[in-house]
Image 1 (cartoon, rainbow, N blue to C red):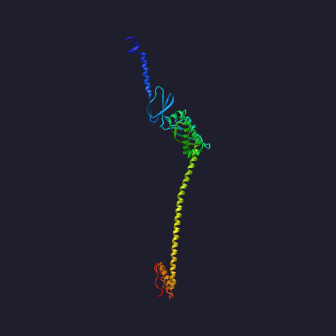
Image 2: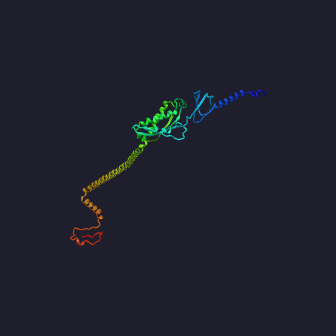
Image 3: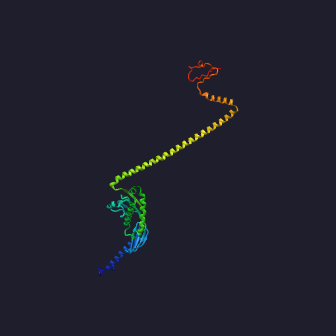
Length: 330
């Protein structure tokens, strides 16, 4: 075939090169047209570098050859930032600062001009992907600066004792509210889920002394609780005993009153009978008294009016317990 260097089966070399380049362009265009957004993310589409729209998770198409650019933002993943410490092998590059900065981050001045070492964690989510990408230059770096600023403000309003012991929950709540308000004012597209204090300690040089003071306070609280327990146990018991004594006294008083009223009634009835028959009543009273008294006497000696000498009649050698019931006179 003539001019085989210029023709190959009816195709010239330039036409073959052009066709190859066209095929490559078509393949690249087809490859860059299709993209996938993961399930926990959203895709922010930029057209010629400007924000166009947001696409949900799934398979999508875009204008190829660099016209459209897609940035995937994990909007359903909970992210966190650590201050004063760091977790190894974290996927978020903004999760913690370099180790050389940890001491500076956690060293804070309290409201009573003392120093506390405060380590904390901020957990957040990306609420608006477009605001997160474009409203501030670097949302993660801005969030770290805002978190540190808010925590220093909250800690600076409290004493070192409140920061280290009793005020932790209040600090977390106030820091969460202030940080969320600050993030909303910057329209960063971020929602703060939680602010959590981790380790809060005094400086190492005074930590031993602070531990001793803290232990003394705990012992004081323990002693107060024990005393309150004893108080709560003793007072009801004393009140119960007092009520029991009062009830017994009231019962005894009622018994004595009833008994006295009965004796009065009995005496009144007896007096009425005595007025009617004095001699009979007197004798009956005497006999009733003797009947109730004599059975209680173990040795009885009955002496008549006409007995002149009593001594020979007594059996002085009688065994104890044996009654002497012989009549001394008839």
